[in-house]
Image (cartoon, rainbow, N blue to C red; front, side, top):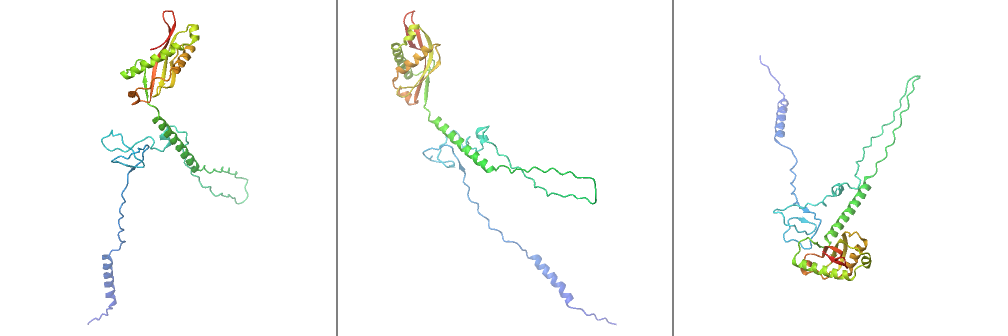
Length: 292
């Protein structure tokens, strides 16, 4: 006895088609095209300088907003460091008068009011919750930052003015009775003292003669290049106001003195001389004026 089976062709082709499609999908990958690589732009290393020179250097080690020559004390390149590079007021001035900024406090959102109810009658009462105080909006920080920036700019300008004044101050050469002097300096001091003594004895204070006053004071005198008196000061008083005033008057009367020697003018703008001025009586006789 034989069996005849009817086979539907669709049942055979359907699994085969599924297998083929799965194989094709697995073999093909999907993805976005690679983004083109962006070429990084070259970076410039720029240094800010606080002082500038009129002439540009032949070979610059750094790029800056102004020309500046280095001191030449290092064997390798070194980046500029300066106390003025920091814009933090605390770094510039230590205890700065500028108020520090306070961070804005986080304001918590106000919760929605909740209504409590009861069912039925009751003798219990719920106390009313205290209302929270309204939190005031913090003071805007923008105005404080603007004020602080203005104060910093003003302080920077004052510092720059002080530095300029310090740089423009005259070069003063100080000489006293015990300091080592060159031949040129010794000759000039000797001529200065002789003229001062001559004018002092001619214009000796009459009141000091009448009262027979004597004493010694230490006087410092600053002369400019032309030998004119710029400033006079008393380092140590004679103990007599009459003698102190007389010494100051005599130094002014003897001005101008000889111009400063060329060797001194080449290095200095002014000369400060500190000497002892002596009002003394020789052998109980006449009171004289001298320097030492």
